[in-house]
Length: 134
Image (tube, rainbow, N blue to C red):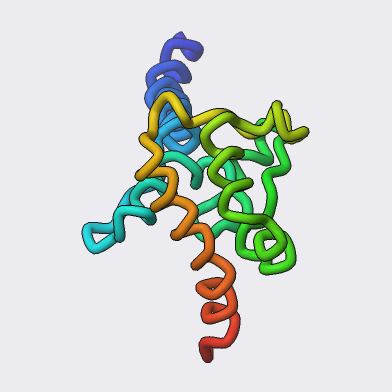
């Protein structure tokens, strides 16, 4: 009889916990209504691994991935737009970065270009966030 009560009490809690973990890990980041097209593409396709601000995501850590810090100007500045376009379109395997998936089948070249333009703004946004008074 006691086991039945434990199941009644803890069963819904465990189910809620499981669903919450599933939602946190597998659902994409929310996209603000005033987001630019490039920001929308980034949040829908890249933020799962790179984080909403480009500094990495806890989701990637769970799966033992270490995506690059896109908010660090030392990482992004030396990379050309053509390199970033190819990296996003073809994935990282041809360029020696095997963890990066290819998005050329999902995104058009114009969308990938918008994404690159947004990537270039991430270091400035991170710097503005650090300079803002708390």
